[in-house]
Image 1 (spheres, rainbow, N blue to C red):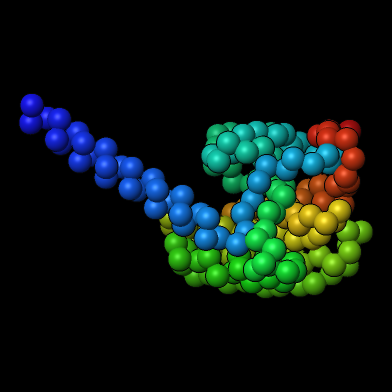
Image 2: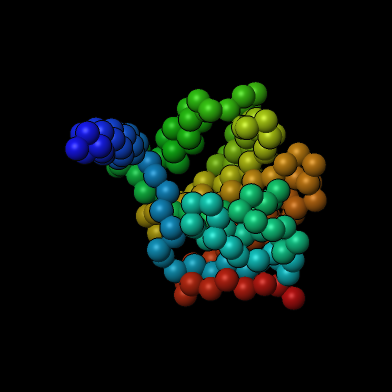
Length: 183
């Protein structure tokens, strides 16, 4: 009989924790969604798609195994609270403030014109869980939607695969959704 009250307390504790996470998520003015629009993504021949640790489609070199590859490319649609986020700059500024769990955070921002129009490129480096990472992201708006395409790497292989990231970005188009590999 004494086990039932302990179970109820445990259930309430877990329930409150889950509710807190949901409320924190609702406060964020931006969040990523799986791309639910039509797009064409051409991968270099040595890359493949996989489900990452968030169960979303990402891309990695074929020779890298598991959920934590040394290099990966992600493409995401960015949903925004339009009352708080008015531009690509707002997205980049908001994303820059999320560094509570990392050490040695640094960021370089460049604005360029791509075929999608104004595009903001960020180069971010940080240490998370004693692992140094470099992330190059391109943020842009097309068809009234915001998107990001990002390349995650360790410092040792960044230069080896950065041209592959550029290739994927340069060949990204919108239309019927497909993912192909180059010859």
